[in-house]
Length: 180
Image (cartoon, rainbow, N blue to C red; front, top):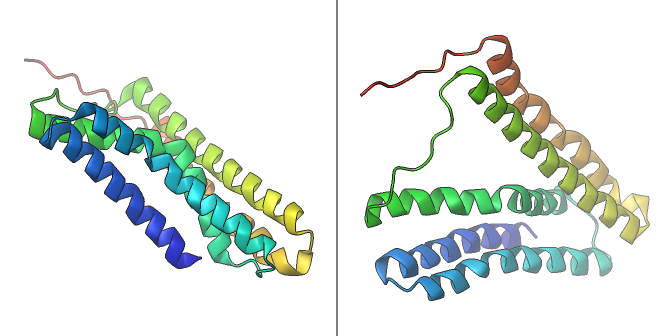
């Protein structure tokens, strides 16, 4: 399962790279769109493989938890990641406008940080939903103990990530206004 997760992560970046090469290097926007639309298919492959693995009697491991986390990250952050990379490549290689940057301070930065944290919480919730579905699907607590443990351990991520929005709320930076 771990090899498949790694292959899916590599596949994500390969398809993303090929899509951007088609768009900016080869000037084939339709081909680029088709290639980039294949990126979510990688998630489907991982989901189907996980279901087949658990249905065939596999003992759940932390790797199944990692697969659920990868899927959740992809659902919540995948599109934004693609947009971020696309904007940077367009700026660097195609004369596009400078990529968007988060606000430097003030209330806009605080809103940005809380919004980002809420997306992390959403990803955690989706991962837990997938793991809970696997626990119910298997119906054998002895085979799914690792999934429950993974959910509890993964809770550290949104808790630790809360440091950033809390710190920006308690000690806000002043918004740096650039004058030209």
